[in-house]
Length: 137
Image (cartoon, rainbow, N blue to C red):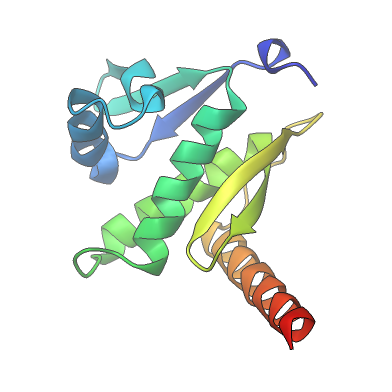
């Protein structure tokens, strides 16, 4: 499907807003500069699958290998952000801690638990790792 046919708004949980604002200021990835403040919430608007990949990858990396131990609030925020990107795009693992959005969903999914999505990606990446390892031997 054409990226232009999809336009989504992803609400960044307040616990992650300072991280996102810092990445936008540092021009870390174009996705982070597409946001706007709306009250206490930070909303990212995009029509790019690459942007959704960046957002989902940020959440997954923070869940799998955080630079500092995550508080319960920040962990829940990362799980919520992963869920919000998963609603609009099919996510696949890329290695053990990264993920990529591979295609738009025809119809957005209803919300679910972000921890379930993180676990599914973790299981898929370990299955991918084992199937690649068996091919190498």
